[in-house]
Each structure stands twice: as structure tokens, then as C-alpha cells.
Image 1 (tube, rainbow, N blue to C red):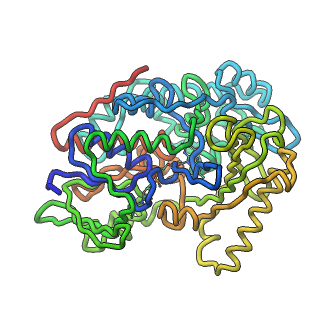
Image 2: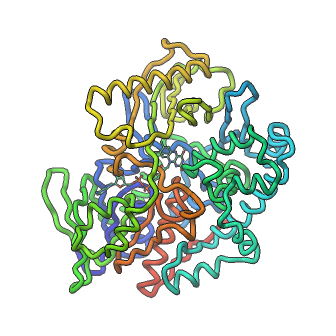
Image 3: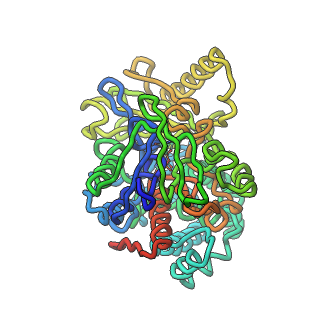
Length: 505
Ligand SMILES: Cc1cc2nc3c(=O)[nH]c(=O)nc-3n(C[C@H](O)[C@H](O)[C@H](O)COP(=O)(O)OP(=O)(O)OC[C@H]3O[C@@H](n4cnc5c(N)ncnc54)[C@H](O)[C@@H]3O)c2cc1C
């Protein structure tokens, strides 16, 4: 491998997008993926005649001008076949009231809000202003957080007067916005916000940055929207893989990186890798893009590997991320309630938010007449680490039974309805994605941690770059694609080139 080559570690959506963009720009790129399948948390697995999305089930950014649409156009690969979700989700607070439907039409969503949360207009209009100003800002490809003059120049280019106005809210939370709008006593609205924000920011309303929360709370509405992919989530990775290979990328799947060392004299990275047959390989490269959770740098870069103690400490101090428990099931479609929405969020006293995704007839996830159903809840990874196998299995049985109970109750199913059922725990996610302890979805979007206050993509070690769901703008396939674009622009700028990906608004 030449000194000019770039290595990307991790073949989830962040790593794949980075690798595909850099290969398209003519760089010699090697992508190393530990699993024998690409996609990471946005991958799929098969059980008999069913295909299950491992983690991500909804896609943002597929509309014209959205980040996936933009990048797929630039890479000259077909936009995947997908349907807009309307409603994007149906949220059941389980308090005996009607579920709240996140309609795609802004007008319909406004009517729903007025009916469900009377007196909350000012809160929502504040969110709408922030949301509009944020999206326009994100579309101008800012670099956040800034680490040098070039980053600052990109940030300044993206800022408009509207962002300066909303910028003063950067230390506020969504709960603060509720107070400002006089809605802090609306318990039902608060419960709804806590549930929704947990999904996208890993934090409730009093711990989610207002600037982040206001945006994700309106992701389901036009002109943005949430999409359901035809086939499966794997189509995103397959398309990016095709682009990468077409442009001469070197794809090494089943290759696990075990150590990264910077040779300061040669100014290259020496990367140790174990392949499928357990052979130890050593690769060299001038730049290295790390798309795994940054916490893994502590294991993979040895103490003498070039990372300062200060940076290691910064990573150690990152807030604790959540794990997930995911139930994968299959049922006869005839057993589901009539007009059952394909995405639901249900509140449960013990489990908190239960997020449910049901396949659509003909979407190729199950034979016609059968539906796959995926239900996920957040969990503390510590509850699943260091437990003996007997305890682990009994905890799994307990959680499966609990989730089944909620599903049977809410969807009027019986035990006999289930054609398939299994549960993934943080341990399963750790095995599948090698994320430490099975943490998922990046870092919480607390005001002290989001956007300008997060971990930069530019590491203090020259040539070592970070992207993925712990880097701005955060989790989700759309978020990590944006982080991939940002890191490619930074890398190319250090090599005296520009990457301009047009916006097709
Ligand atoms: C249950 C759940 C539900 C979700 N729902 C949604 C949703 O509906 N919509 C949405 O947009 N997002 C959702 N997300 C979040 C989304 O899936 C992730 O934020 C995103 O896919 C992360 O992509 P990534 O590339 O940053 O990381 P990952 O997907 O974790 O990819 C990292 C890759 O690196 C590989 N790797 C790890 N260690 C090594 C090593 N040592 N050497 C080489 N390779 C290695 C892994 O195998 C993996 O393929 C969900 C996540 C979960 C877990």
C-alpha cells in the first residue's frame, strides 16, 4: 500500500460512505470490516424466510436534498426504492388517551398537535424556527466542532443571521423551551417529548439540547421525512459497496483491526489486522479514518501509539452510552389490528420507550401475508456485562416475556400468533458490531456534548480522523453520512483539494 493511501476502519454506513466518497475522488482506499457482512447497526440478518433489520429501521435524508439523496446522486448510484412513512410513528402514551400520530403533512401534524396538546402552539413554533434555521445550516456543510482555521472558515461560511439568533439558545434544553413557552406544566406533552427524544438523542427533554431536539422532533414532516426501504436496510450498504468497488476501492471484509500505531518518522500508520483465516497482516497508510465508537481507540491505539494522555482522558470522560434490547418476531398479518401503523412507540412503566417497526406486505422482509416485527428498548449495558450464563439467560427470558406481553396486549395478539421470536441484548450487539459493551446510537445530545461541544472529527494525531455516530451531527444513518462527508472534506482540504457535493433542493 502506498504512502498516499487512506484506510477506513469499519464498514457501517459511516465508514462505507467515507470510503465510497474518497474512492470516487481517486484516492487509493482500503476499507477494513471485521464482520463478514457490511452495514453494522444498519445491517440485516436472515432467519428462515424472514429478513430482519438489525438496528436501524427508518431512514431520514432520502428526500430530494436530504443527505442520502445528495450523496447517492454524487456517487452516481441509484436512490434506493423507499416509501415515505405517514405517519412516521404513532406514539401511545398508554394513559388511556388517543395515540399521537406524526403525520408527514405539516398542516395535518399541526392539527394533530393542537388537538393533542392544546396551548402548546408557541412551543412548536419556536421548534419550527430552530428546525428551519438548523437544516439550512446543516445543508451548507459546516464543520463542528472546530479544531483549526480551515474548520472555522467552513463554519463561518455556513452561518447566517438566523443561526446567530438560534445560537444563543445553545446551552438550553428542550425542557427550557417548554418553560419559555409556558408549557412546563403540560405533563402529557412532556411525556411525549421525553419518549421521542430518548429515541433520537438518548436523553429526555431536560437533558436534550434545544437546538438538537427541536430538529429531531420534526424529522417526520415535509419537506423532510422518514422512509421505509424496500427490500431491507442492507440496500444502503449494498449501494455504497457497489460505488466503492466500481471506483477501485480495496474492500477487506472479515478483517478485524487489532492495533493502530503512528510511525512519526515515516508519518504513516501501521495497522495490524486479523483476517478470516486468523492470519495477522500489517498494512500501512498515510491517513486513517476511524468510524468505530471512539472509546475503542483506547484499546486499539497502544499507549506508545501517539495519542496524548489528555486526549485519552477526553475519551474516557465521554458520557456513558446506552445499550439496546431488540426483539425480532414474525406474525401472520391477519392477526394484526386493521390499519395498524408500521411504526409505533409505546410507553411502558418498566421499560420506558418500546419502539416497534412492522414490515409492509411486499417489502421483501417476509413472505406475503406474514409480517416481521422488531421492538427495541434502551438498557444500561452494565446490567448485561459480567453476568454468568444462567443469569444472562434468565434475564433474557424475562425481558422477552415482558416485551411479548406488551405487544400481545397492545396489538391484541395471542401467544399462538408468533411464528418466530428471538431477543438480542447488548452482548449480541457487541458480537455483531464489536461496539464496546454493546453501546449503540452514539452519545447523548446534552447541551454540554452536542454539536460545537462534541468530539471533533479531527484528532490531535495528524492523519487520524473520526466519523460515525459519536461525531457531529450524531446518530442515525443520515447523521453518520453527514459526518462522513465532513471528514472527507477535511481530509481533502489537507491535500489541497475541495469536495463540493451539490445540494439538489
Ligand atoms: C436498535 C437500534 C435502532 C436504531 N434505529 C435507527 C433508525 O430507525 N434509523 C436510523 O437512522 N438509525 C437508527 N439507529 C442508529 C444507526 O443504526 C446508527 O447510528 C448507525 O447505523 C451507525 O453507523 P456507524 O457506521 O457509525 O457505526 P456501526 O454501524 O456500528 O459500524 C461500525 C462498523 O465497524 C465494524 N468494526 C468494529 N470493530 C472493528 C474492528 N476492530 N476492525 C474492523 N471493523 C470493525 C463493525 O463490524 C461495524 O460494521 C438504530 C440503532 C440501533 C442499535
